[in-house]
Length: 162
Image 1 (cartoon, rainbow, N blue to C red):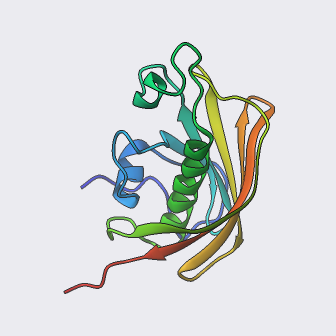
Image 2 (image 1 turned 60 degrees about the vertical axis):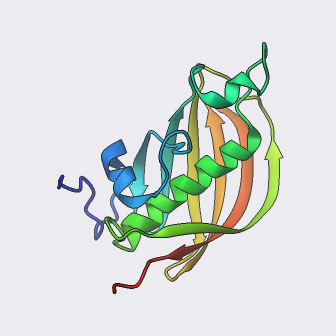
Image 3 (image 1 turned 60 degrees about the horizontal axis):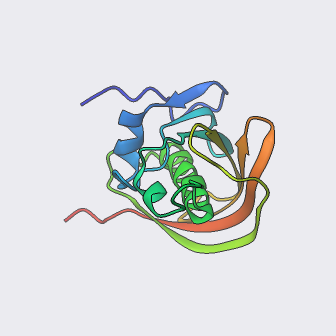
């Protein structure tokens, strides 16, 4: 078992989660794991997920041939996965096989196409949380350009030990 690089009891900035830690929190795997790392983690408050968009991802064979565009729903999913990592660290859910379920998505706006070669930053801020249900605001940024914004609610479920 690898060491957890984030002190879940701390609230300082500058903490990160690498892909190994992300996989210990989220159940998602290729091709649906959409976060490469998480930086600037503030426990119970906010973090920034990083998604490096590359041409060899499977969605680009059909969305759209000749004009590859990262699907908007996948940007929203990447925001949700980023929030799952924040909650996983905030609630000590590392290695607990927790699942995350969308409950609602509101106010979604797409402002810029995300294409292969872009580094998509997923800025997630907890608006309400602490229990099983959390509400977030998220912004997908490419450089200093806003690509997407949304508010979303998710429920976190940890299986009971048998």
